[in-house]
Image 1 (cartoon, helix red, strand yellow):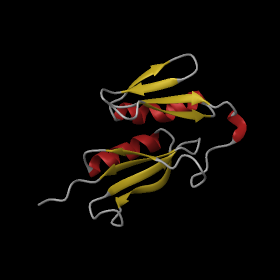
Image 2 (spheres, one colour):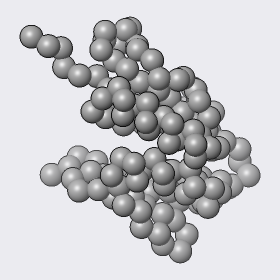
Image 3 (cartoon, helix red, strand yellow):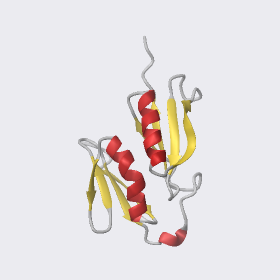
Image 4 (cartoon, one colour):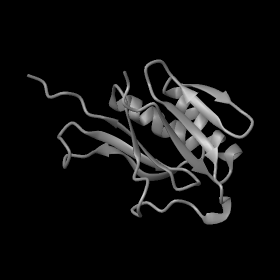
Length: 133
């Protein structure tokens, strides 16, 4: 049994958020489901990811570092996949926070990029293979 069933995020403009999230989530193998006021993405054996319209859409974007959301990291199978997802996200309008690079402060194998959407929601694409031998 999964510990996390779903993750919901409130956004100011649901249509714009769909435009930004859909290419990324589809590239990660998730299928999109739209309802009247929200969208979700699902993939076998993964928690559901849901976008909801904010109750106060004019409250401004989330600010990284404040109480609340930090970021969501998507682990992928290679550095090339980090690069590919980073490009898909930026093509969909995500802002680059940190371009793909090594993060030796985590491990000597940790390769990642960070992007942020119009709502200030930050995601990471990362690859950290096990140490060989």
